[in-house]
Image 1 (spheres, rainbow, N blue to C red):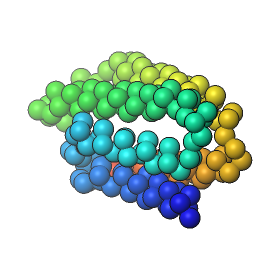
Image 2: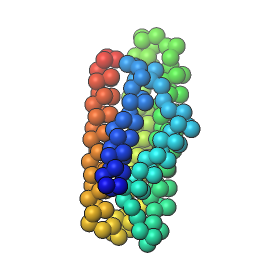
Image 3: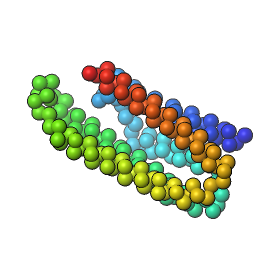
Image 4: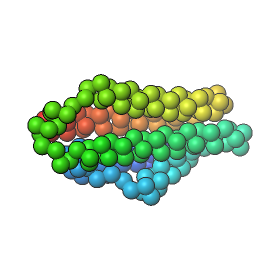
Length: 171
């Protein structure tokens, strides 16, 4: 019963959390979580994952690396978002014609490549951190982890769809 409750709560928090971002129809004016709110949400997600897995003492010795990788990803994501907000904010006073005239597609591609490289490195670090722990999980723990992964992937897909719709609305 505890396992089912933990998985249900995890699903609720993982799928409901993007609603905090969907407060505006414009991708650039959307309110973002404060650093404290983001830390609280990250703490809740980490606790739910750890609770759903019900780690043994031996398995728990692998957990700090996983938790640190999760926190590092969140920190780096916040830094990327802050950089985007800064870039967009610095151009807020420009007219549409100025924006079109001052476009630098090569610079954009370089910034995008750097962001993707950072995301890739963060994801690789997370996978590397999970590997030793995953190798020690029992079959039922692997099933719970698989269920959590499905919820996360579904949530990510939904978030991507929402961003795509918002960007189409902005065009």
